[in-house]
Length: 476
Image (cartoon, rainbow, N blue to C red; front, side, top):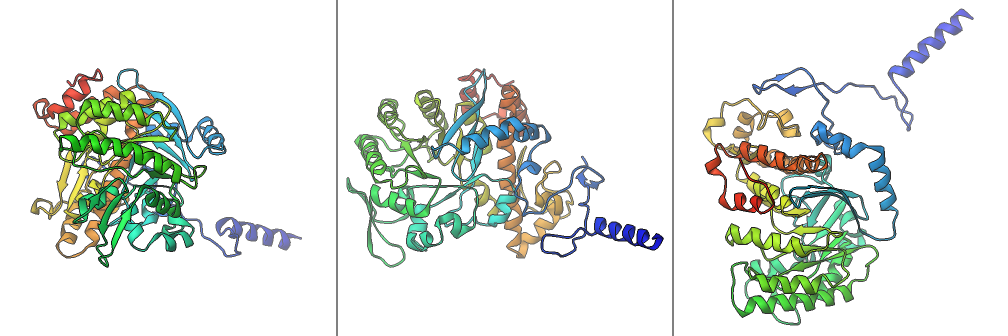
């Protein structure tokens, strides 16, 4: 009996130390190292463990003050209830800033909920340059972009549809937004021609003439299976003036109607309208008046961030948000500079996208709260701090500025590491913005953000000062 009891205790101890997995294999319990960056940039003891890159939960990335907002049982239950609704999109306004036009929302889409304000990284051809899908998911990204023009050319919508859409092709389990392809054809393809029928251009791959009509654009996006689709709009330069601006605005309205009629999956895919009108106040108002009469799930502010003066830019943004319906998401296209993001959240925008964080990483520029670090510069050759001692991304956790500087001399892995950091920076920034809105301290957040970004008050961009003043925030 005594022998049996001893044997039982030994077996129980072994099972506790080496729990049996579902497949019957023993798995050893391991503790992740507790680790943090000290203010000096040296590594010390503490604080919370870093998950591996395949971890899908985004809360490890959040500032600690954000975790309660994301993980409250009331919030989770509300999101589950909204996800079960029949509509493919639901916008739940969580909080609104009483001073500015900023708001924090839960955008419920077919694949998951998205916390707004949100920055959406751009994966042109179904992949993000310099980062894998698993790593992007590990950073907590809830939605990213695919490019209809590039994916429609190669590998083609038929192949992607056979892979159960772009989600299956990429093995991406979260949300996708696809653009219409119009911008790329007008800006990248030579000898493109825009007519009422659509955009005619020659394929850069085989030289064949192709027509991208509103119907064709939606057909491709239906095959891709994105959660949010963009209408085909008549894209022109943001600095263009004259009758062509009015023509493009009216044509975009007509093309929106054709896109709505062509959508085969309105119960699964959300079609967003794109507000046009250039820098002309009356034309933009006319477009807003017309497009908001259409029952579309959301609206994008287009035709900006293309070289126009910043004062013109922010005035068109605030004009648009003033006229867009409160109950629908507002997507400001092509905006990704940190200052632009914070200001445009204050002006009432919910969603943003830009290639900025990935493109700037390829040039060795790492984003930090005080601007950027040019890692290729020799001043970082012997600097053993992480890019940002306060950043908790995998790059800052594992690598020093000196190491990254050395990699940029000969190894493309440097771009990979800085890309991870830059995307993490953008995502964390937007989560911090959201938390400040929820806690009712967004104006104070703006003051702190600007003071850290710029060494002195006289270095604040004039347009940002004016834009924030228009929503009752006077920078100190």
